[in-house]
Length: 132
Image (cartoon, rainbow, N blue to C red; front, top):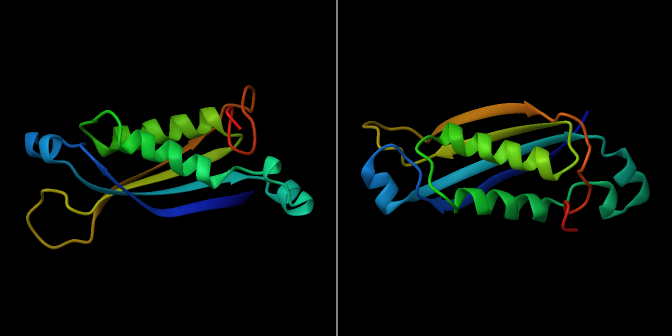
């Protein structure tokens, strides 16, 4: 299975368990890997035969910058669910990194990574999604 990768998307959101995180917000970094057959796009050179990564970026941005969640696990689930609902992909891997997690000590980031499979392609489109 082929893979479309969008790595290092940075957004400011208000997710977290602590009141300070929800009041002040912080930076989140999101990586998405989408599994699908890219051969039709490669052979046709047509956007309608692949997933428009600009559409994925905007969808992820709307979730991370939207309603607050307490857990980054919930942010990742919301992203995976929305991507699988909107785009014709077999599987999505979503990684949500929290570089400034309120944990004492030195670290690059704390993160969750989830892998979810689509339940079929009914109602989904290639390209930019339903709106494309």
